[in-house]
Length: 259
Image (cartoon, rainbow, N blue to C red; front, side, top):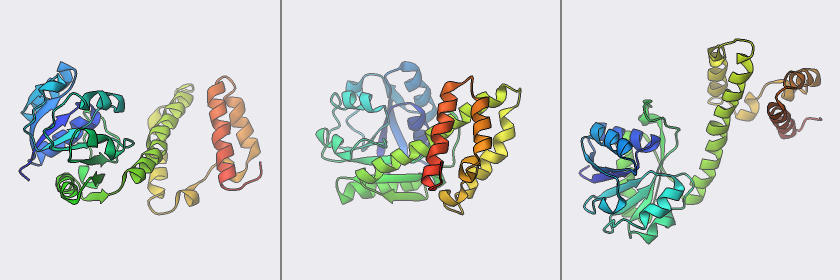
């Protein structure tokens, strides 16, 4: 693929995607970030130049990948001359049509994964959700995604928005549960790594059975004695107590159990 790519953003997602594309031979010609440190750090890793002012983004690239926060994106795109080149954002919840204001060629390049800037991930297994305003642009983005992933899917904005909502539950909310669990066991000087096998098995089970069938625990058993004991233990943490009750009630309602 001989397309020249500009990366707009230097956060977690932008960094990992840019580095993976670069490592697979894609030419990254420029990085934009509002902060010098972020832009310079990523540009050095990619061996390209960087800019910190939107109006200095080059109009001579072939593909522009926008990977900034939603609010920043709306402010940013109104100040850049994209020269009618292919512009794609990497967001889960922004409609593709938001980009039609800035170019006749636009789309979405959305990897369904959580990223940390300096943590490697196996890109070949990450689903890339592609959308574009015409078949030519769709083919270009599919080809670009296929360089780094074996799982490339064409989905529309409504599907992607629903997928992003589901992702918040399985990733962001789940990670918050880890934080709660960590705080609970630290009170008794227990290390978080004692929970690693349980976390791994819970995630692994849903690959071979439905989440509904994989559900276990006192709420599913309607074990009121255990649940009441747990609530008593959380007496000094009213927010955790409320969360425990809410989730237990949700499990019982979902499985149509009497309260």
